[in-house]
Structure formats: C-alpha cells, structure tokens
Amino acid sequence: MLLLGIDLGTSSVKVSVLDAATQKCVAAVQYPETEMEIISVSSGWAEQSPDHWWENVKQAILKCNATGLYDTKDIATIGIAYQMHGLVLVDKEQHVLRNSIIWCDSRAVKTGDEAFEHLGTENCLYHLLNSPGNFTASKLAWIKENEPAIYEKIDKVMLPGDFIAMKLTGDITTTVSALSEGIFWDFRSNSMSENLLRYFGFDQSVFPQIQPLFSSHGILKETVANRLSLKSGISVSYKAGDQLNNAFSLNVLQPGEVAATAGTSGVIYGISDQLKYDHQSRINSFAHVNYSAQKNRIGILLCINGAGIFNRWIKNLVGSNRSYAELNNAAAKIAPGSNGLHAIPFGNGAERMLNNQQIGAHFQNLDFNIHTEAHLVRATQEGVAFAFRYGLDIMRENGMNPTIIRAGKANLFLSEVFSQSFANVTGTSVEFYEGDGSYGAALGAGVGAGIFSDTTSAFNNRKPIDSVVPQDKNICEILYQEWREYLHEKLDSQNKINDLINIG
Image (cartoon, rainbow, N blue to C red; front, side, top):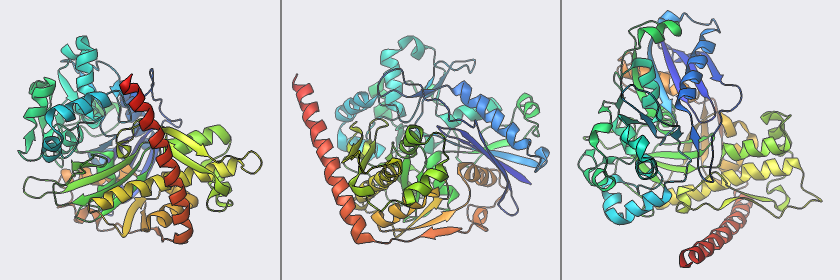
C-alpha cells in the first residue's frame, strides 16, 4: 500500500510516494525544475497564480509516476502540505477570482495593525494568540477595501492547501489549524472569531466547512484520477501548512520538541501545551496538527522571510553557472566571519520578528580588495544563521528553550557552512532526517486514512541520518554580537525615518 504526498511550496511542487509498511520513500520528484515565479507589481507585493499551482501539481504527480518505481493503482490516499497564510478566492463555479496573495506579501500590514489597535492588543493576543498582522484575514480585508468588485463575487475563501484539495476532489473544506494560521480562530471560544469577523465585515458563509485535520477532505474526482493514472475513490486525508507539516514529518508533536527548516523562508517551530503568545507578536502561535480543544498543542513559530531566497539571490548574482554544492564548497574554504563581512538577510518583505518592519537586506564592511564571491556566499549563510539566533532568543524569552532541534537534510541545511554556523550561534545540536514536506504529507495521509492507527505508529522507522553539534561558540558569539549591533543600527535608522514620515 502506497501513500502520496504533495508539498506546494513557493519555489516548486514536491511529490513523494511512500510505502506505508516501511515508511520508506519509493519515489520523489520536484516540478518545475526552475523556481516558480513570484509576481510583484508593487513594492512589498507577492502573488502567485493558483491555476499555475494546480498545473504544477499535476505535472509533478505525472513526473513521479513516470519514474516507473511503483504501481500508481497501489496509491491509497493523498496528503497535502502547502505554503502558509496565502489567500485564494473562488466563485460559485470554483473559478479563481484573482492571483493568490501569498505569505510574504506586505500590503496588508497597515490593515492588520489597525485591526490590532481597534480590537485591543491584549484582547487579540488572548483570543487569537496573534496580532492580525499580515496574515490571511488582513489580506482578505485588503481585498474588501481595494477590490470590492472581486470581493462581491467570492463564494469561498481558502488557503493554498484547501485549493489543491478542491481541485483534486471538488470539495472545499478547511481545518482549525488553517483558520488559526489565517488568524480567524478564537482559541478561548474554540470557534471562528466573532469579533474579528464583525470588525472586518466578513460573512461566515464564505469560509469552508471545518473538518478534522486527519480526516477525509474529499474523494478524488474520476476525471482527475484518470488524468493522473490514479485509482478513483481514494481520499485526500490530510492538509497542513508547510511549517506544521515539516514539524510533523520530524515527529515534533509533544511539548518542548522543536523543528527547523531553511527553505525559501527560515523557521523554528516548537510545541507548547499552553495558549502562549508573544506580547509584541514577533513570533506566532497556531493550532498544531494534533491540536484539540481537550489537548492544547500549540505551534510556536518564528519566521525569517529572507533565508533560502537570500541564498538563491546571491547564487544568481555571483554563481548562476555553478551549483549550490559548488558555492557551498567555496564558502567552506573561507574562515568564519568572512573577513569582517556581515550580511543582513531581511530583504523579502516585512519581518514579523522585527515588528513587521521592512529594513531590506544589507552587506556591511564590503572590501573590494579582499572579499570574493566565496566571501559573499559565506556571509549570506552566516547572516541567515545569525537571524535564526536573533529569533530563537525571542522564543527563549517566551519559554522555548531547545537543546536539540530536528531538521530535514535539505535546502540550506545541505551546506556545511550554514549547518555548523546555525549550531554554533544557537548553541543547539541539530538532528537531520531524510525527506521533505511531501514525505510528511504522505505520512499524514496515512494517519488521516486510518492506515496508521495513530501518529506514533507512523514514525516507527524514522531515525536521524546525521547531526551537528556546536563548536567554536566563543568566536561565533563575538561575530553574532557584531552582526546584532549592525542590525540594531539599521532598525534605529528605519524607526527614525518612519517617525519623520508619520510627522509629515
């Protein structure tokens, strides 16, 4: 019996097929080969086409089938992981009304800040565990105010994973977890937030039916099954945001356990059994995949928008004709600290852990006489690692104190420079596991379809493949403090500019 997992990322779609009996990956692919476009028609905007997502999902499944490593009719169920916080709108015919406003889009920051103030900061944090910030609810409010003709046509509001499940099955459902990541969920009443809906003027009818996360979210349409050479009648039995799913794939389910990922964005994600929140909303709290009203399992999420995307940017700038592995090897030959070169990685929109400020990406101390392309690559990866430490310190302020972090051996963690810098500066060991988000989605589908009796049995064969432990902590601490001082200079400068603009 086989399990199919789909991971709808910002850069590509990944698909894995797992053997349910062994939890081993039978086949895995990525599509497209080049990274998916992010449409940015104005500064701070970021959109993608849901219809292009669907085409890429189909092509990824067909590409996986074409490996010939399994019988497609042995696939018993489908799971979906997806980029979080995106807004997808469809009409009554399930036609997409506009491009999705995706997670790193910053246009709704002001909308969310105004809601935070109007609803009351403590009231929002107590009930929603977050500021409305730049999340899905605020993005929908932006549509209501700025694109009223589109807003009037809305039949259903979805997150990206809900949309892919709809295309597979024709059914539209959502989960408490998805609603919490959109900042629609009141954790105290365990229902949609009436205060937020009333403030923004949203009709509850535009939101899909709520289903348990591990459950059937629809049956594969016969036309889709035929197109993808799959067995008709199988279910979509799992949907989760990518960071929740990444944690699930690493068996991070219980209080105190922590996962990390360093893909397009960088994330540390830990589990708490308390309804915890950061008073500045610099980190965020969502219902984890195993959350229930009876058993709190809250995912505490730190996000860095500019992680892998910064690494990709520097690759395109200095090494477009070389592989990531070649650039990583070149960076490894440079001493820690990159000969005084510091990189600030916040060039991908408003950063929640910086109170939604947009300070951009920066290099400090660039010397044309000594710094090479390899220095730029190393400084970039060290800068991302230092940003992780900055965010982890905020998590520590809020009671999350990991000694071991679990991560997939993928993306930036494929770089020895980044992995060692991450361990050194955070002071935590890292355990690495095989498999990406599509692996976790496939496991989740097995749980949701009842193929695994519970989440524990889904991880019977899950073992770490590698690890890294902190080294040279004193040197790294000095380098980090220099980097932190430079970051605060940029933040102070931006605050002064913002104050002048507000006065004006």
